[in-house]
Each structure stands twice: as C-alpha cells, then as structure tokens.
Image (tube, helix red, strand yellow):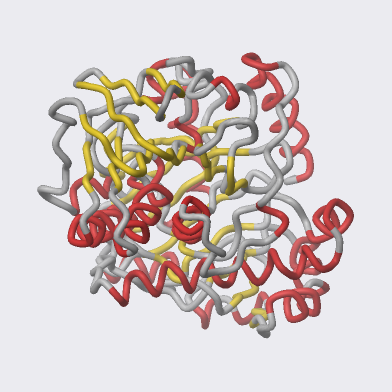
Length: 439
C-alpha cells in the first residue's frame, strides 16, 4: 500500500471508547480464493450499507476489510448522525453547481439522515440514540450574530425552523459554558457508531453478504474480471466498490492518487459524571453539539453520563505530534468546561476523516475503469452520508436508478490536490489561517 501518513496514523490509534461497548463483532479473514459478483474494499458504513442493499437485492457480495470490524473511521468517529458531508458553503455550492444543484444537495443531506434512521429502525439496531437534532454553539458574539442572520437560509434550504437560543437562555437549556448563544436544527441524532456499525454488519450477513476482516487488498487488477489480491487469496469479481475513504491507498487503484486528503481528528471521553459535577458545570443537555470555529470542537453528554469531546488532530502521527495534540485537546476541554478540568479522561484516540479538493463527496463510477465504483469524501460527517452513499452505490452497481437522492454535487469525479504525495503540506497554512478566523 502507498499511504501518505506515517504508519501509526493507520494503526490502533489509541484507546477507543466504542470498542469497549461491543463484543464478538469481528469478521474472519478471507480463507482462500473466492469469486463474487461484487467485491467491496472497505467495511465501514459505505461498504456495509452497499453490501446490505446489494444482498437484499439478491446480489452475491463480498466485503474485504483490512483491519478488524469497525477498525476505521466508522468505528471511531464522534457518533454525529447529522446534516453535512460537504465543506462547501451555500455560496460556494451555488457558484460551482447552480441553485438547483444546491437544493438537490440539501435534500440529500436530509435524506441521508433518514436513510440511517431507517436502517436503525428496520433492523432493530440498538445504537444508544439520543439528541433532537444538532446544536451549533456560538464561540463569540460575532458568531452568534451570524447564526441569527442565517436562520432564514436554514429555513429555505432545509425546510425546518431552527431554534435560536439567546445567551441568557443557555443555562436554562443546560448549555452553560463560555459561549454566546446557540442554534438547534431539528434534524439528526447522536448514536454509538460501533453499535450502529455492528448492527449494519449483522443485517448484511443475514441478507447473505459475506464479510471478511483482516484481509487487506494489496493489489487491484483488471483482467477478464477484477482481481483483488489479499494475503490469504485472490477474490475475483465482476464489479468492485471502493469504500476506503480516508484510509485509502494511492495505488488501489492508481486513479485514487492525490484525489483525497486524510486529516486527523482526536477524541476524548470522560468517566461517567456525577450529578453534582453536571450541576457544577451547568451542562446537562444531551444534545450533540459543535462550536462555530472553523477548526471546530464537537461534544455531547452521552446517555450513560460520559462526556465526549473531539477536535482536529495533529499534522503528523509522530509520537511528539500526538503528545502535543493530546495536551491541546485536554487544554481546550478544560477551557470550555472548566468545572470538569479534573475529571478523569478514560479514553483517548484519533482517526482519519477525508477531505476532497472539490469540498464535496463523490459517489459513482470511476472513469476509464469499467465495473469500478467509489464512494468517499464526507468531510468528517460520514455517519449519515456514508450510509446513504452505500445505498446509492448498490443501485448504480446494478445499473438501476438510485432509490434515494443522488445529487449532481456528488456525481463529479474528484480532481487531484496540488503537491501529490506531499499534499499534507497544504494543511499547515490552512490550519494557521483558520486559527486566525477563530479568534
């Protein structure tokens, strides 16, 4: 494999809380050569959703996951099943694709949340869901003014009326902290991503999909059929779905080279908070929340009383860089929630999210590679959008019209980032600029 980060970025990546909440959900390694109508590289939300929907349609499908079940971003994210998937603003999307395409994308964001919720309900997945939509927390008076000014746009683009929470109302809403107001958009839920992942896997297996872990694809070739080489044997397939997102390799296939940019995200989780600790901070809300910074923080009080807090990760995965980001996330947590600065942090980990040069996800056929499809680039909001993308890909692979929205914004093959294999160098100036905007 050819990857652009140091090996630890793709390794165990710390003690992930979600791993402690599920048991016995791993998949066996590929035992030997196999043929399948469709092979899927990557066993995250995209791959599992595609596998489930293909199997339900009677298609023979095999999933090949490089690590254990839930190894990548799908098993270690913050559990925000919400609007998003693109980093482009409304103005950017409108200029690039047009007003109609913008409306189609916004409808797809809502549909993606409905797709994930529908899968949870249809398959009886116990995913510890909570939160009535998502709450955006203003980190400055200027940011709150922008929230107020953006209400009409939210109503127009999403068809819902957000709740504006004034500074003096924050305490009553259980949202106390060094904040200046908030806005809640009533779309989305918070969940345990590993339980959701395990539920999707069980549903896919029950429908007939074959899931293999510990089976990294080390070579992908096209002959009479696609050939996917693994350490344990070669899978041949008529069609292939790439669902590796930020954990992709530059040469699987070569087309992927420089068309995606993984970035690190870091998360901590506290020990269960006592009621007096919750009262001392004044944060009792179970809303999933994030702040208005460009380099945002995301956080939520979970049903079991633990508090999750996440933010961007480091620029490298060296021990020194990881120690630095560990200190920073703890310092940011203590600054935003000062009453909890001495609370025990029981879990800390990081993982990779995936950015695209277009600032939008991609789902569709890979140009000049007959029978090859890809879904990727959710910009840190992949719980809902990856679930939806997998469903869309299942139909595209079969040559059928997608059963859910498939907007123009997602149909354009991704262009390459500048600097090729050294494109991580783009992050340092971008982070520095964002830091200035966040003051």
